[in-house]
Each structure stands twice: as C-alpha cells, then as structure tokens.
Image (cartoon, rainbow, N blue to C red):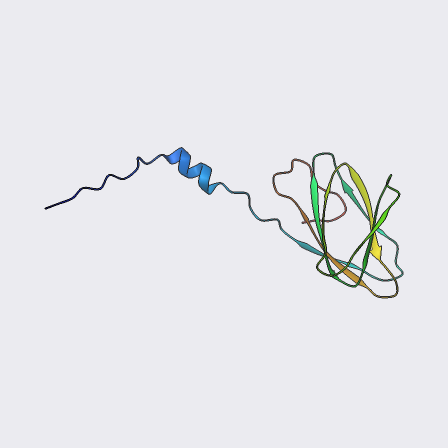
Length: 114
C-alpha cells in the first residue's frame, strides 16, 4: 500500500524572513599604547558600539558621566549613542581592545573603521 505525505506549502517570503538574519558584527582590533594620548570614539544617536577587552587594562570614560570604567581581557561592554568615549591604556602596560558596530545601525561610529 502506498502512502502519501503532504508537505507544508512552500512560501518564498517565509523562507526569506527566516534566512535574513543579521550578519555577525565585524570586529576591529584597536591597540592602545601605554602613556599615549587617549583615543576618541564618537557613537551617534541610535548607533550601538560593542567593546571587548583583549589584553592589558583599558580605561574608558564617557563625556558627561562621572564614572570611569576599566575593561580587563574578556570583559565586554555595549554602548548606545549618543556618546563620546575616551579610551586609553591604564598603567604602564599596552592595552588591546576589539570594537564592532552592532549590525543594523543607520549611522556609522566615528573613531574606528570596521
């Protein structure tokens, strides 16, 4: 005896919606030498910047905020604009940081090129 299995109706639009996932962020390495001027990054309104410590200790401050932050290797932070960040190596050791703009943002973050 033969059996017939009905397959769900194919919908190209439903397939496109499932397959149109955002691309993963493109990371850029940023070296922050010890005892050098700070690196300024502008995050425009609506943009989102992802940061990850890679080595040394990264000092980070945001204009208009009283607190400073420190990122150790492996620590992560997401910043939503508008924001002006100042980044530098803390202490006598060079620091490394990975930066990426979250996908889907309309405006580009200034101060690094993805």
